[in-house]
Image (tube, each protein chain N blue to C red):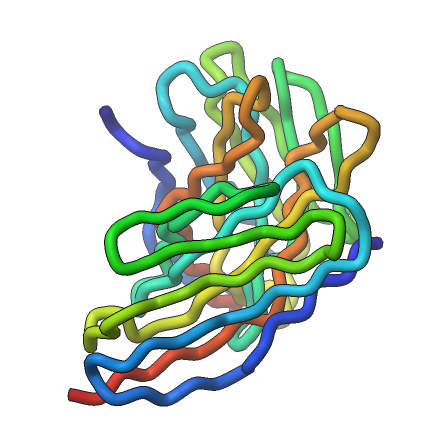
Length: 113
Length: 113
Protein backbone atom coordinates (compact mmCIF):
# COMPACT_ATOMS: atom_id res chain seq x y z
CA UNK A 1 0.00 0.00 0.00
CA UNK A 2 0.89 3.65 -0.10
CA UNK A 3 3.41 4.89 2.46
CA UNK A 4 3.08 8.24 4.23
CA UNK A 5 5.93 9.75 6.20
CA UNK A 6 5.66 12.90 8.28
CA UNK A 7 8.46 14.98 9.69
CA UNK A 8 9.45 16.06 12.20
CA UNK A 9 7.79 13.66 14.66
CA UNK A 10 7.95 16.27 17.43
CA UNK A 11 8.23 20.04 17.31
CA UNK A 12 8.52 22.47 20.23
CA UNK A 13 8.09 26.20 19.57
CA UNK A 14 7.80 29.45 21.40
CA UNK A 15 4.65 31.43 20.77
CA UNK A 16 5.06 33.63 17.69
CA UNK A 17 7.48 31.32 15.87
CA UNK A 18 6.89 29.91 12.40
CA UNK A 19 7.08 26.23 11.46
CA UNK A 20 6.94 23.87 8.50
CA UNK A 21 5.61 20.33 8.65
CA UNK A 22 6.36 17.90 5.83
CA UNK A 23 4.47 14.92 4.40
CA UNK A 24 6.05 12.55 1.87
CA UNK A 25 3.98 9.91 0.08
CA UNK A 26 4.99 7.01 -2.12
CA UNK A 27 2.38 6.96 -4.92
CA UNK A 28 0.10 9.27 -6.88
CA UNK A 29 -2.92 10.46 -4.91
CA UNK A 30 -6.39 11.83 -5.59
CA UNK A 31 -6.88 13.08 -2.05
CA UNK A 32 -4.52 14.69 0.43
CA UNK A 33 -5.79 16.21 3.63
CA UNK A 34 -4.16 17.88 6.62
CA UNK A 35 -5.84 17.50 10.00
CA UNK A 36 -5.32 18.86 13.49
CA UNK A 37 -6.31 16.42 16.22
CA UNK A 38 -7.39 18.12 19.42
CA UNK A 39 -6.87 16.63 22.90
CA UNK A 40 -10.35 15.06 22.78
CA UNK A 41 -9.53 13.17 19.60
CA UNK A 42 -11.53 15.24 17.14
CA UNK A 43 -9.89 15.47 13.72
CA UNK A 44 -10.32 19.01 12.46
CA UNK A 45 -10.02 19.57 8.71
CA UNK A 46 -7.30 22.07 7.87
CA UNK A 47 -6.85 21.59 4.13
CA UNK A 48 -8.04 19.41 1.29
CA UNK A 49 -5.09 19.81 -1.06
CA UNK A 50 -4.28 17.02 -3.55
CA UNK A 51 -2.29 19.63 -5.50
CA UNK A 52 -1.48 23.32 -5.45
CA UNK A 53 -1.39 25.90 -2.69
CA UNK A 54 -4.03 27.11 -0.25
CA UNK A 55 -4.07 29.58 2.61
CA UNK A 56 -6.37 29.97 5.58
CA UNK A 57 -5.37 32.70 8.01
CA UNK A 58 -2.05 31.84 9.64
CA UNK A 59 -1.98 28.42 7.99
CA UNK A 60 -1.06 27.56 4.45
CA UNK A 61 -0.30 24.35 2.58
CA UNK A 62 1.40 23.34 -0.63
CA UNK A 63 1.28 19.98 -2.37
CA UNK A 64 3.68 19.15 -5.19
CA UNK A 65 1.99 16.03 -6.52
CA UNK A 66 4.64 15.27 -9.14
CA UNK A 67 7.30 15.13 -6.42
CA UNK A 68 5.01 13.42 -3.91
CA UNK A 69 5.20 15.76 -0.97
CA UNK A 70 3.12 18.30 0.88
CA UNK A 71 4.06 21.06 3.30
CA UNK A 72 1.99 22.68 6.04
CA UNK A 73 3.12 26.13 7.17
CA UNK A 74 2.09 27.61 10.51
CA UNK A 75 3.00 31.25 11.02
CA UNK A 76 2.98 33.24 14.27
CA UNK A 77 2.15 30.11 16.26
CA UNK A 78 -0.17 30.28 19.26
CA UNK A 79 -0.56 27.95 22.23
CA UNK A 80 -3.90 26.83 20.79
CA UNK A 81 -2.01 25.41 17.79
CA UNK A 82 -0.63 22.66 20.05
CA UNK A 83 -1.72 19.14 19.23
CA UNK A 84 -1.08 16.44 16.65
CA UNK A 85 -1.03 17.25 12.96
CA UNK A 86 -1.80 14.45 10.52
CA UNK A 87 -1.34 14.19 6.81
CA UNK A 88 -3.61 11.63 5.12
CA UNK A 89 -3.74 10.52 1.49
CA UNK A 90 -5.84 8.32 -0.75
CA UNK A 91 -4.03 6.55 -3.55
CA UNK A 92 -5.23 7.39 -7.05
CA UNK A 93 -7.00 4.21 -8.21
CA UNK A 94 -7.89 5.35 -11.71
CA UNK A 95 -10.42 7.92 -10.56
CA UNK A 96 -12.27 5.61 -8.18
CA UNK A 97 -12.46 6.60 -4.53
CA UNK A 98 -12.70 3.90 -1.90
CA UNK A 99 -12.65 6.39 0.95
CA UNK A 100 -9.44 4.82 2.19
CA UNK A 101 -7.28 7.49 3.72
CA UNK A 102 -3.80 6.37 4.78
CA UNK A 103 -2.47 8.49 7.62
CA UNK A 104 1.07 9.37 8.55
CA UNK A 105 2.28 8.95 12.11
CA UNK A 106 1.69 12.62 12.84
CA UNK A 107 3.71 15.56 14.11
CA UNK A 108 3.24 16.46 17.77
CA UNK A 109 3.41 20.24 18.04
CA UNK A 110 3.87 21.97 21.40
CA UNK A 111 3.73 25.75 21.53
CA UNK A 112 4.94 27.36 24.76
CA UNK A 113 3.78 30.82 25.85
CA UNK B 1 -25.53 22.27 9.49
CA UNK B 2 -24.75 19.37 11.80
CA UNK B 3 -21.45 17.63 11.32
CA UNK B 4 -20.80 13.91 11.53
CA UNK B 5 -22.26 12.50 14.73
CA UNK B 6 -21.27 9.30 16.54
CA UNK B 7 -22.68 7.41 19.47
CA UNK B 8 -21.92 6.50 22.11
CA UNK B 9 -19.09 8.82 23.13
CA UNK B 10 -17.48 6.32 25.48
CA UNK B 11 -17.99 2.62 26.01
CA UNK B 12 -16.51 0.02 28.34
CA UNK B 13 -16.85 -3.64 27.43
CA UNK B 14 -15.46 -6.95 28.64
CA UNK B 15 -13.38 -9.35 26.54
CA UNK B 16 -15.56 -11.63 24.43
CA UNK B 17 -18.50 -9.25 24.28
CA UNK B 18 -19.98 -7.63 21.20
CA UNK B 19 -20.23 -3.88 20.49
CA UNK B 20 -22.16 -1.72 18.03
CA UNK B 21 -21.04 1.80 17.19
CA UNK B 22 -23.20 4.24 15.26
CA UNK B 23 -22.52 7.08 12.86
CA UNK B 24 -24.67 9.65 11.09
CA UNK B 25 -23.04 11.42 8.15
CA UNK B 26 -23.34 15.04 7.17
CA UNK B 27 -26.65 15.68 5.43
CA UNK B 28 -26.29 14.93 1.72
CA UNK B 29 -23.17 12.77 2.14
CA UNK B 30 -23.61 9.23 0.87
CA UNK B 31 -20.19 7.79 1.71
CA UNK B 32 -19.19 6.66 5.21
CA UNK B 33 -15.78 5.34 6.24
CA UNK B 34 -14.69 3.83 9.56
CA UNK B 35 -11.24 4.12 11.14
CA UNK B 36 -9.57 2.73 14.26
CA UNK B 37 -7.00 4.83 16.11
CA UNK B 38 -4.93 3.24 18.85
CA UNK B 39 -2.98 5.42 21.23
CA UNK B 40 0.04 7.06 19.69
CA UNK B 41 -0.74 6.14 16.08
CA UNK B 42 -2.59 7.57 13.13
CA UNK B 43 -6.07 6.26 12.28
CA UNK B 44 -6.27 2.99 10.33
CA UNK B 45 -8.92 2.41 7.67
CA UNK B 46 -11.48 -0.30 8.44
CA UNK B 47 -14.37 0.05 5.94
CA UNK B 48 -15.96 2.33 3.39
CA UNK B 49 -19.65 2.18 2.47
CA UNK B 50 -21.21 4.05 -0.42
CA UNK B 51 -24.85 3.80 -1.43
CA UNK B 52 -25.30 1.02 1.13
CA UNK B 53 -22.62 -1.19 -0.40
CA UNK B 54 -19.18 -2.05 0.97
CA UNK B 55 -16.67 -0.42 -1.38
CA UNK B 56 -13.45 -0.86 0.57
CA UNK B 57 -12.09 -2.92 3.45
CA UNK B 58 -8.89 -2.57 5.42
CA UNK B 59 -6.74 -5.24 7.00
CA UNK B 60 -9.04 -6.14 9.89
CA UNK B 61 -10.35 -9.58 10.95
CA UNK B 62 -13.83 -10.85 10.18
CA UNK B 63 -14.87 -9.98 13.74
CA UNK B 64 -15.32 -6.47 12.33
CA UNK B 65 -18.38 -5.85 10.19
CA UNK B 66 -20.44 -2.85 9.17
CA UNK B 67 -23.50 -1.82 7.29
CA UNK B 68 -25.08 1.33 5.88
CA UNK B 69 -28.77 2.09 6.08
CA UNK B 70 -31.10 3.73 3.51
CA UNK B 71 -30.68 7.09 5.31
CA UNK B 72 -26.87 6.67 4.88
CA UNK B 73 -26.19 6.25 8.60
CA UNK B 74 -23.90 3.39 9.47
CA UNK B 75 -23.11 0.85 12.17
CA UNK B 76 -19.78 -0.77 12.98
CA UNK B 77 -20.00 -4.10 14.79
CA UNK B 78 -17.16 -5.87 16.54
CA UNK B 79 -17.63 -9.41 17.87
CA UNK B 80 -15.58 -11.36 20.41
CA UNK B 81 -13.82 -8.25 21.70
CA UNK B 82 -10.12 -8.44 22.50
CA UNK B 83 -8.08 -6.15 24.73
CA UNK B 84 -6.34 -4.92 21.56
CA UNK B 85 -9.64 -3.58 20.23
CA UNK B 86 -9.42 -0.75 22.77
CA UNK B 87 -9.15 2.35 20.64
CA UNK B 88 -10.84 5.49 19.35
CA UNK B 89 -13.22 4.58 16.53
CA UNK B 90 -13.73 7.35 14.02
CA UNK B 91 -16.37 7.73 11.38
CA UNK B 92 -15.95 9.99 8.35
CA UNK B 93 -18.36 11.04 5.64
CA UNK B 94 -17.82 12.50 2.20
CA UNK B 95 -19.70 13.46 -0.92
CA UNK B 96 -17.29 11.23 -2.83
CA UNK B 97 -17.89 13.21 -6.03
CA UNK B 98 -16.65 15.72 -7.11
CA UNK B 99 -14.56 16.13 -3.98
CA UNK B 100 -13.16 13.24 -1.97
CA UNK B 101 -12.69 15.37 1.15
CA UNK B 102 -13.59 13.46 4.30
CA UNK B 103 -15.09 14.97 7.45
CA UNK B 104 -14.69 13.17 10.76
CA UNK B 105 -16.98 12.74 13.72
CA UNK B 106 -15.85 13.10 17.34
CA UNK B 107 -15.26 9.37 17.72
CA UNK B 108 -16.27 6.63 20.13
CA UNK B 109 -13.68 5.70 22.71
CA UNK B 110 -13.91 1.95 23.36
CA UNK B 111 -12.20 0.36 26.34
CA UNK B 112 -12.08 -3.44 26.57
CA UNK B 113 -11.26 -4.87 30.01
